[in-house]
Length: 193
Image: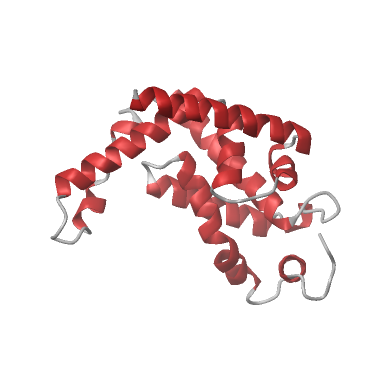
């Protein structure tokens, strides 16, 4: 991490480390939406779980701020690493439980918020189809391929930052991205065919 005076990540890390009054709020404001989007990519059909992962990740980051080493990683990559571990823990917990498949669940509460104009059944069907495609893509890709693809396409992290999040070299990340994109294209082509 660059120690330049204007680097907001460095300033935020320092403020969290020394317990500045508004540091936790700034952490949430700057990274909450990004971590939520990352978690939602893993749990597209379960917004409450994605929100829980985001909250747990931010809380763990604030509680364990002394573990962050700016020489080893960027602050953002460190945060995404925490979120990734939280998501993996949740996926492991779900595998142990038997329940209705996540792809078959669509919260009714989301349907209530729709304006009267659109066809609710059509919107629900479109959401279910999108959830199904994401679920199938998640099944077609390994966990690390899915994470790398998400971090690249949705969170727009560089290959170097992704490598820090997933614990791989930049070159390995490029290889994983290539493989994930190829599998994703094949899966989407198979669905359209």
